[in-house]
Each structure stands twice: as C-alpha cells, then as structure tokens.
Length: 91
Image (cartoon, rainbow, N blue to C red):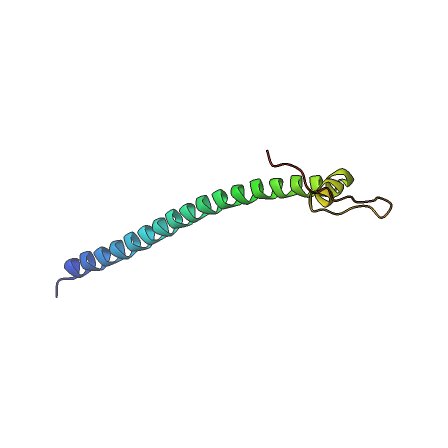
C-alpha cells in the first residue's frame, strides 16, 4: 500500500470538506444579508405608515375636526335648532 497516495487522498478529502463548509457559510451569509435588506425596506414602509397614522390620529383628536366631521354627517349640538329647507330651484 502506498501511504503517500493515501495521505494525498485524505488531504484532498479534508480540503473538499473545508471548501464545502466555507461555501455553505458564505451562501448562508448572503441569504441573511438579502433577508435583512428586505426586512429593512418593509420596516421603513411601516415607519412611514405609522407617521401617517399618528398625524391622522392627532388631526382627528382635535375638537374642531370632531365637530366638522359631525356636521358633515348631519349631526347638531343639543342647543341648536335644525332647519330643513326644501323647494329650492335646481341650478
């Protein structure tokens, strides 16, 4: 049996195993990088949506906005009289 050939074959197997481990780690790092990038993009979209919702909440929480929306829906205050005008000409 030739031990030098066996030693070369063993070293080739070790080299192949190391190459496989490095490549698989590199592939996993690349996929993690891509996933992190897409998640950062979705987080930025969610942050913009959150800012928009906070602005809407602040606008709707103001008393003037609440009264304007109520009037638009045809509501009135309890101390007010409501009149219905009919028979107007159509322009």
